[in-house]
Amino acid sequence: MNLENMYQEIILDHYKHPHGKGQVEKADAEVTHVNPTCGDEITLQVVKIPGTENFNIFYQNQGCSISQASASILFDQLNGKSLAEGEIAVDHMVAMMQRTQEPDEDILGDGIALVGVSAYPARVKCALLSWMAWKDAVIQAQGS
Ligand code: ZN
Image 1 (cartoon, rainbow, N blue to C red):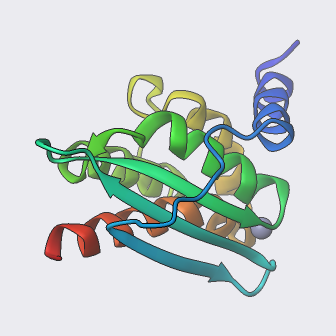
Image 2: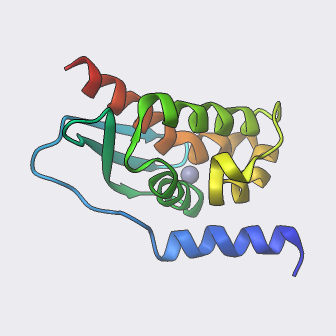
């Protein structure tokens, strides 16, 4: 199996069996981000872990396989993390999509499987949607 096929398998697996999907009654922040060109939508909630700077993630989403797989990967990488920790991964994901940085598995985990999306500018927003939603939500939660 070549690398491209392996990455396809990872993306499909996250799409079919998303990690961490769910919602809570009361969150510290809740945001909804949409990608109208593709029809992707995510509502993401963050709940601060008491006594820490870290946040748990809850989300509901719909849309294409890339956007949904990316949200599942985001959960794996950033659930229970702080803004400072998570921002490193978000910035790295953006840089990978802009092709200014080589993918780093230590930072992105399964997110490196999305590297191929960077060749399709129209789909980049699909991959970044949940990551931008997370950053937005955590910044809002910290300000409250
Ligand atoms: Zn999409």
